[in-house]
Image 1 (cartoon, rainbow, N blue to C red):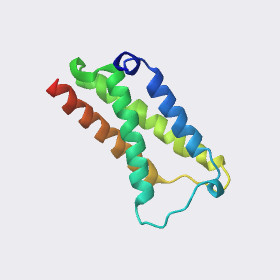
Image 2 (cartoon, one colour):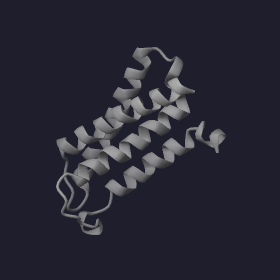
Image 3 (spheres, one colour):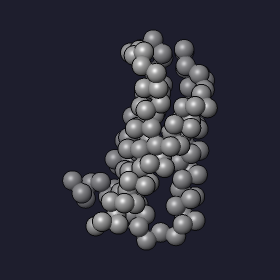
Length: 119
C-alpha cells in the first residue's frame, strides 16, 4: 500500500473524486441543515488531497519556495474547481468554499509535515 501511495495515482483519483462531486447538480446532493457543515466538508476533502500530495511528493527535504509554489498550484486547482460549478445546475461560485478549500490544503500540509518530522 505504501508503494501505491508514493505514486501520483491516489492524488489524481482523489482530485477526480472532488471534481465529480462538484459537478453534481445541487438537486442530486443530499441537504443537511447544519450550519457550517459544508465548509467542514470542503476543509476535510482538501485536507485529504493535500496529505495525499504530500505523501506522494515527500515535502520533507524540499525548499520552502517549492512548497509555496505547490500550494499556489493547489489553490489554482481549488479555484478552478469552484469556478466550474458556475456552469452546473443549481450550483454557484463561493469565495467561502474557496477559503475552506485553502484551509484544508494548509491543514494537510501541516499534518503531513508533522507526520514526516516524527518518521
